[in-house]
Image (cartoon, rainbow, N blue to C red; front, side, top):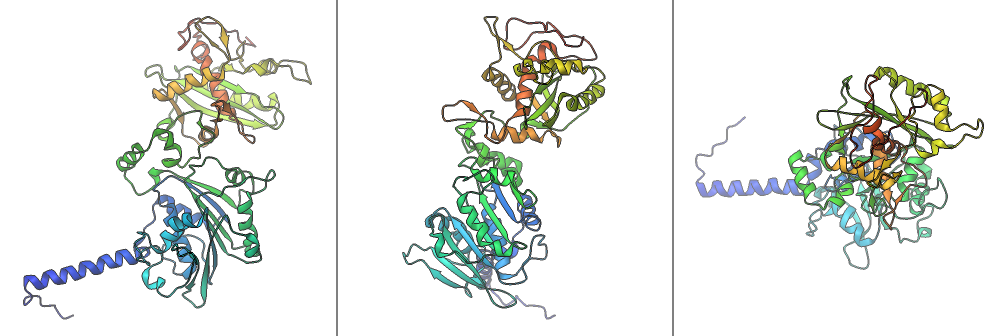
Length: 509
């Protein structure tokens, strides 16, 4: 190879050459971003999931790259130019794509911008679709001259052209009925109501119809930061066909940012917006019942020392509902409470629940006392016995009274708000942790949908119930009075937030 001779180039020429080279590099970076695209962990997981699931709802925090990630998928499928590292679904032919936004302007500011002109400077080809591909595309621009695109035809690498239709929720669906698509993408959430139990929101149902011909190879993607709360589409995805439908959550900490940078971005938002802007969780009603940060609340499991006190707590199920049990312990040195285990069964009798209770007793080395709600004093129809007494007769160490707190006036109370305040205060003080185990992920789910209505009253979902959170609340209000360790009684201990101490009597003693 011939060696280049720069000896005759003066400083002025060298500056010009460097400047030209710098411009060329900047041009490449600006107009061919997809070539050097490296996905962050959430984006890569999303790409992998497209090979497994037909319908994916991305519930991602702000600034995590969700729109860019979907734009990359659209580009790869439109052109067939898949990178060597691509782990997701592939098409070996031109595809037809429908992209939907809430309005034309919203569509232009999101999906269209990412695909064509990321900086909105009029320099088309600076988005996911690189300039050299953009220049070969055919465009139909909107007649109203608002820089919105109606559709694009994109050359496919092996011949033919892919097609992209840009539309909105205001479209007259009759105008595109009968049109077949391989891929549908809605950027930001679809509004709408579920017409009947198990049915999809009305706009999403159009996606299902549009891709019905390609059932074996269709791909439907919804991408959103869930700032509008838990819309019906979440329930639809979670209640139907989980083999084909997936909700993919991603937090700000799953993006490319360092922890320090993510913390800085988080702190720039008001705390009441953290749920959806930082952690990608939909807010329900006027807000969640519990303010929490998952990273601070969940902790790595560890072996519980024998001298630590323990207490279990029930939430009894009815008919098709769950019976849930939560186990709680406390570090006597730090004062931190831990929800260390949980279990549940649906449509079960006490005899079905007792074995899982006995297992935890055996692990602890003694009979753990169990708190329970006031409906445990109700009589079962078949036997006429109180539900709590049935468990006691089966050998479970049930407390003699239902869960209650004692006010400054000495009166007992089973107030939900009082129990919630106790738990929230411990969370805020850093004195409550949850073991990060597969079984305990149910807490993360329930914390995310347990909410208040417009009147700030605690409400429960029509399709869900926070059984484990309720059980935990019953346990927490009784813990200081009745938690045991190695058979030693701790009656008479000082109870936080109460004045008068009540003694309990165990069933089965």
